[in-house]
Image (tube, rainbow, N blue to C red; front, side, top):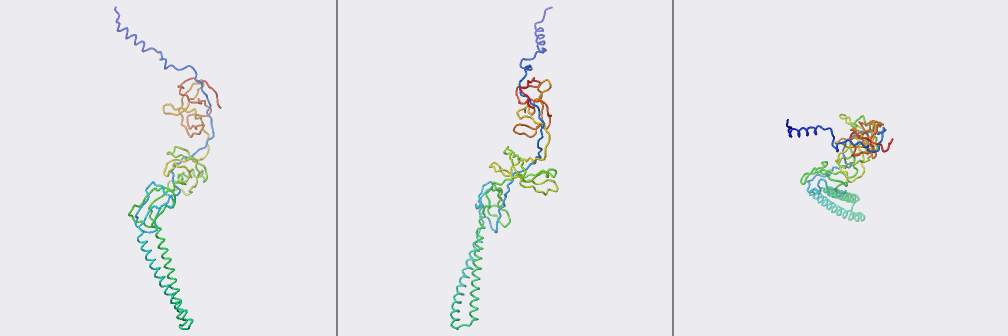
Length: 357
């Protein structure tokens, strides 16, 4: 029987495909990796309550007018920095100037009346000395002089009051800060008590947050807390400034105001969270150098009794400069690779370089 060359070729390829030989690149390395190994520590760590909040200015000023008048100019815009004493708003002062002119006229009239009364008083004094007028006539002239003097004093006081109103047509900033809101526009009527502009001081910034009634007993004024501002990606050491011991009857939460350190990067309205210490707990920790990221999961390589490395996913907690808290996935006393190495594969043999207790 003649053999078919095509059949023999297919049989050869089939046998080659079923071969159990592993390509050289996929072979498991039998040579142990020499890496530092450490034991998972069980430590007493502080417990924190995480409270979200917002950066607020402790000096928020609503600028209002002391007089009624139409706004002729608003010299600032939202977001603009202003200095103490800087003119912000100009009001129509025609009524004020008219009142000043009226009081000036009243003062001049009172001065003229007083001058006339003084002339009569001096003349009657001379006549009384010569016996030409009675004492009763002199008394009436003296009374007229005193009334004229009183009228002049009253007119001067009215003029001073009218002139003081002039300053209220120019509204100035009482603090250094930033304009955050303009409630009025040019042409609007400004009235006493109605806010025209709101200014926030860019210093003395606070972090305002709330804690539930179950945790309020752990928070004290003067306590040091950690504040994390998302926009800064930075941890700030802050101090509890005020605790408002009057909770919301619906949410059962209490307001906490934390004093933030001075930094030019902080802005009012920034979002973040504060960590309030509320106690201690026993928890495993690992060195920061042991953390491994595989496929988007964070964990460590744990060694079994035969020193084979196995990746274990962990739920991690707070981080310090040298260690990381483990919430789940490890327990104290387990052996892990102390320094993450990209060469490690699942099941690799590890030779301990050193053992840290």
